[in-house]
Length: 188
Image 1: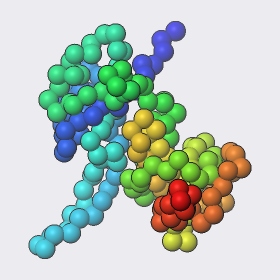
Image 2: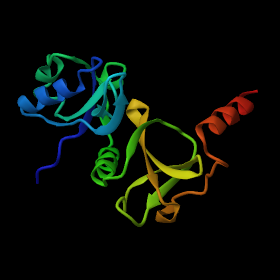
Image 3: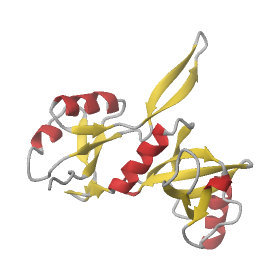
Image 4: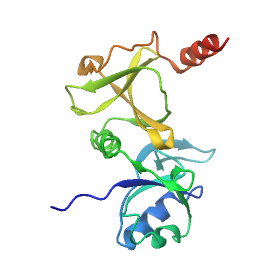
């Protein structure tokens, strides 16, 4: 039985995410570069751009024992993400959750990863089966899905009726500013 190779985070030079992802695919690797739509306005025009959800990173399935050098020698690749010099695989469940967010068609945004909050399972809607951390911002509920190894996350707006808590750890008024201020109070 053939098992899928693990995903690894690939650290790339700034603004090289698309080039590295395309080059890895050209070398026969399965790569994944999650993108989101963002509007940009300049003095003379406005434009919608596809930007990396995790700037400076792309993902690649690979076997560390075989064909590692073609990845490391790809122009723009800085390193394989890991602990020290030891590459560490990214959870397939985390990659699948990010893919589900992109496929849902809902508006997604990069978001700073938070270790505090309520872990939830989405039971209804286009994200059914996705797990993440829920937080409330500006009277709206958002779901955060993290790539722990990169210490990065993405967020998507959701209907709070779609979620079921997985555990009982809950923060009050979970806005980024409240989380920061609570952390500051706890540290005093």
